Amino acid sequence: MTSVGADSPVDGIVATVPIVLSLLVAVWALVAAVRHRPPDRVQFVGLAVLEVVLLVLTVLALVAVGGGDQPGEPGAFYGYLVTLVCLPPLAWVLARMEPTRWGSAIVCAVCLVAPVVVVRLQQTWEVLGG
Image (cartoon, rainbow, N blue to C red):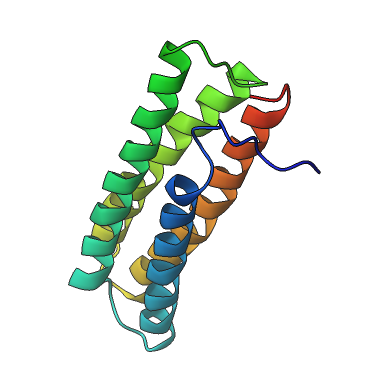
């Protein structure tokens, strides 16, 4: 697999920060779930910060598209982009509806999916070289 081009708006620190943040929140939520704890304030703050970071990534990607750059697979790219920004609010709502250890498990699962979606976003951008 080739690496994402240097001009890609979904590469570098813009992609690394949400991946690392998401994995940190996932670990915190996993520990809470294993300890039979409901979602706590740290998980919800982590989801909120993750959402802000993902919105920054989204804005940068849309600015690049508005500037003339095009993703390799536009349909898949926009689908992943929409999915990505919907994940933290979805986790928030579902975790609030399930105030048990399973709420923490939901946060963990969603935070493990987010890095995969970021990587897929990168892959759909690079198909035609960005």
